[in-house]
Image (cartoon, rainbow, N blue to C red; front, side):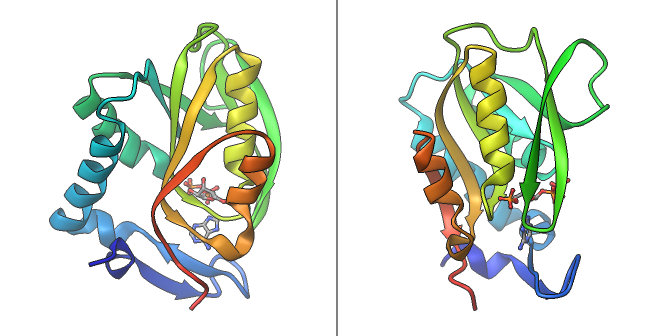
Length: 175
Ligand SMILES: O=P(O)(O)OC[C@H]1O[C@H](OP(=O)(O)OP(=O)(O)O)[C@H](O)[C@@H]1O
Ligand SMILES: Nc1ncnc2[nH]cnc12
């Protein structure tokens, strides 16, 4: 059974024309949540990863249990103004807005092999900004992994253009 069956679609949220893929229903379901985390852990079981980087806020929910299973630490990529120590930031556009994400400058050491986790890739604007931040700190993004891909919005292609591999557990083809 595809993981899409655990995810609810809300039309016209947060603005008209957006089909919002609501993962709260997957998170609410013990089988859905466990299946998603286990599948990610299995994919990266034999790949050397130093840290998992997670994008606020929904990325935190998947990346934290995955880091626990993989015995790695977490790097928090947060919305502007939320991290207390010295940060660097990156502005970006995404499907329904514009924002800035930041990371602590001391969170990544040069040469660190980082797995980037978020719940969903749409236009890829958020993930691209996160990859740029990690690279500015000298980190290497091994892969960007998502629970959900929205292929019609072109995010995978955008990340491919900057040389970053992507992986998604499931996809909505627009229905
Ligand atoms: O591929 P994009 O077009 O950039 O969109 C994807 C991003 O949008 C959502 O985050 P949102 O900014 O809504 O924040 P949230 O996780 O706090 O809900 C989602 O969690 C991704 O981070
Ligand atoms: N259509 C969508 N559904 C849920 N989260 C999103 N983030 C960006 N686009 C989204």
